[in-house]
Image: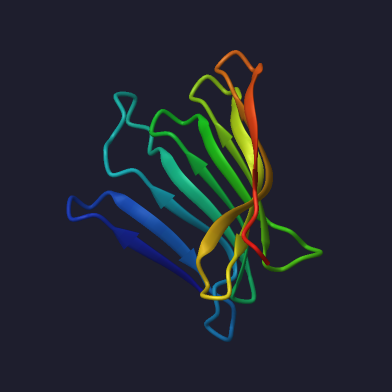
Amino acid sequence: REQKVYFDNNILKEIRKFNSNEQKHGVWTTYFDNNSPDKKINIKTETVYKTGELIERVEYFSTGELKQIYTIDVNYNNVIDVINYYPNGQIQSEGKKIFTKSGKEAWYGNWVFYNRDGTIKHEKVFDQNL
């Protein structure tokens, strides 16, 4: 089943997909509420679900460039691989997040932060005392 949601101005806001058990399943797409000059509807996020479980989320800048890729690690369900991008397409940072016992996300392990030209700015290790 597919469900479409609209902003008050009747512009498409979100497309949601469900399986036969009414669980989130497939690609959910959200859109920015501003119309671009070329009248193109710009995607804000694409989130992939499989039988109710989050698999991956891709986020975009309002200009259409890639902003973030957020992927659940298939080997460790509570580990998330994250890559953040500058608007010019260069990687801004990359590392992992984990779900803490309280269910919140926390930065974890080695993170690498980059300058806009792609050179390494610095690295930092996050330890959540697990």
